[in-house]
Image (cartoon, rainbow, N blue to C red; front, side):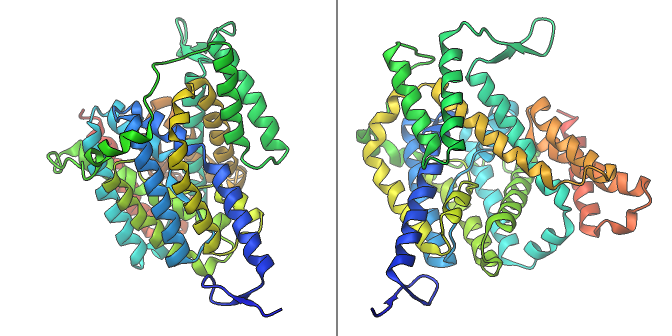
Length: 429
């Protein structure tokens, strides 16, 4: 049989190879498909209309996947990311009190910085300058933050009377439904079921509907709302561009996107020769997501599910992008999803992100302690930027105290100083 020419990879591929790539794309899509539901609900806490941001989530995912397919030829799925959406909502909007229009502007400026870094030698310089322990700690710290958010949405924890937090009521129907969803999702995931998180959300939502368990006002998700979606386009508010809070948020968001993406791609990309184009494609997609009206896109960790299924080229990303586009026709079903069904996925995703701690040198306290500060201070302060600041300031300081100052890259000293200024300015608010 004559080999079939594929535009992906620039080589001749057998039909079976193409089928494997398509199957990998389907696997990756179902692994990350929960983001269609979860992202709008998280952004709703920032004041954004979930019934419209769901379209922005889908469209930005489609564009991101197509860029990975046709530009980078990489098996990476780009979607509005878990973690960065938490920073967007709970740090920028809730914590700093900025309007979501301003948060969109912050995302756009941070995306421009990300794109500049990705397209210049700064990507290589920063990759070499920032120690791996801090890269891993950023991902793990955001993961722990997500776990906290998930536990709150499940009503498993609440503000304590004699402590900061305490256990919620295990007799609450919402909590029981969330625990059911958690056990179900874990069971499906551990058995390697394709789309385990998506199935967990669907089944838990059905059980909740059967028992009449509701944990919030219903959200009007309807394909007819697509006619109102243009009101979400180009909504960036730059009126406070020169303000200290705006600039601090831009700096922090840029650092999160750059280092989280860099660390993820270095960990899961099968062919590191494709790193540069993949990194650049990821950067430019963050700008598109801001223009479309959602939090920044990132390379989804769930891409690893598709890669493990044999995905090696952009055909995998193209397949996922097509499935995201088709999901538009199932939007009305999302109105029936309670937060108790979303919480288990947030908790498990956070736990998966925390697995990055396995790459930190625990035996070297000068490596571990700065990473530790990032991991614990992000959830305890409710601010990703604060956790990053303490970690990046502590790293060169501890190396100096440990007589290892010469081992610290000069850019790490510079980043430490910038994050120190970040903390100084924050102290004034």
